[in-house]
Length: 266
Image 1 (cartoon, rainbow, N blue to C red):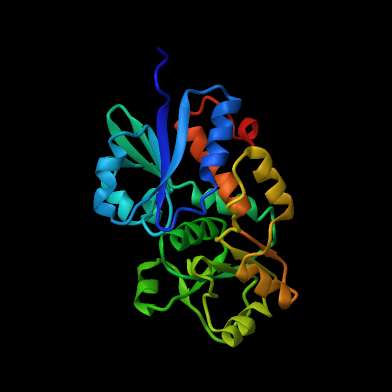
Image 2 (cartoon, rainbow, N blue to C red):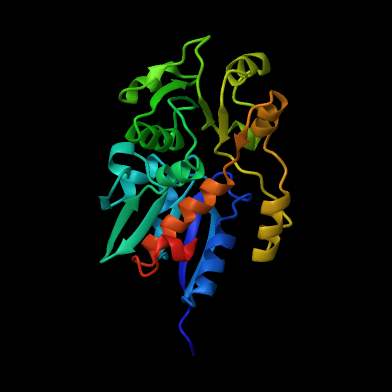
């Protein structure tokens, strides 16, 4: 009998919308690797260790990117300064945490010229976006319902009403609940001055079951609520699907211990 494939998974809440299994399983198939990738709803982070015990690697999504770091034996790369992880890999009996969101986000900007940015939200995803923007010398401001949380971000300014921001990033999960991150008129006031907006949330569909479904969906996908709102204000916008793919490619490099280059995977 052949051995069962090594299991990997993505954890989050909600998780039904996740397209990560299609991306990773397609890559495992293409490179003929004996791995299988699933998605798991995690309702309590304290269940994390028992779920990890059966896995070769994992990805973490909302709302666990910050709390998951405490389950790592070691944290590497930009994840240390961000204080949030989205990728875990089991190596030499240790769980090693990484953050591929940051670079995945920046790759998605495709060389857009940005001097300053406003991030909406202050969770784990916001930390990744903030870190990579600051690394590229982009001034970062932030707006969050709990203003005290902004103080935990080094070198970040609080939002100033009337300020013009080249880039506005929605790093909240509001879109998953079918709402915008701010009241319409306030959000419109911010967006209408921007050069570009970016929604970390991405559109999904229950009909996406295969790689071919996914590729068709990429070409014909609907806008997220935030992207649709930006378009109504005639502002160019990017959804989170490119970032999803890029962060997945970078995580795949980790899962395969760099046996394949980013360009090969892409």
